Every structure is written in structure tokens, then in C-alpha cells.
Length: 132
Image (tube, rainbow, N blue to C red; front, top):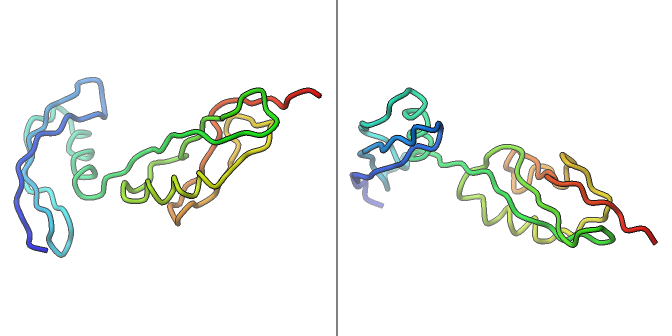
């Protein structure tokens, strides 16, 4: 793939300022995307975020999982830390294979290291077991 220079605008999401950062970066080279220049950030965190967003975008994944025997049919879950953007779909496929048994508690780990992402999928709400 041929390396190509691109100009783009990004809204930084690190702090409440929401700076509009103009950037020039390459794509398609042997090293992947690379930030060349930027302007518009009001703090150093914007620079750090932009490098990551262009060169190795990461996301926190949130979704829900089916629950058997609980006072709710679904429970919300998320990754404990961000994962590479390109691993979102494979991780979702792993999560979709799961059905959990109540009771569930906040922070409970339901999946470790999905698709070699060095994170855990954790429960984010309590689900009590139904009383029979």
C-alpha cells in the first residue's frame, strides 16, 4: 500500500476543553499511520491523545450479556482498560458466546484476556438471583 499524506480535524476528548486539532498524518506506509504535524491543542494531553488516535487507536468496549436466573435479563459489561480498535469485533464475538448465571456483582470478571487483548471484561451492575 502506498503511503499517503492526509489532513484532518480531530476533536480531543481528553479534557472538557474539546480542542479542535488540525493534523497532517500518513497512512499506508510500512510503519502504518504516522502523525506528521498538528496544531490547535491547548494542553500536552491533546498531543498524547492525537498520537494514539492516529497511530494506535484504542477504545473501551461496553455492551451487554444475557443473564439466566436473574432479576434482569441482561447485564452491562465493559473492558477493564482500552483495547486496540481493530480488536473490537473479535472481542464482541467472544462476548456474544456468553450467557451468565445470576447473581452477578459489579467488577466481577466474566472473561480474561479476550483475543489476546491484555484486559478483562467486567460486570458494571448488580444482578440479583430470582427467588424461587
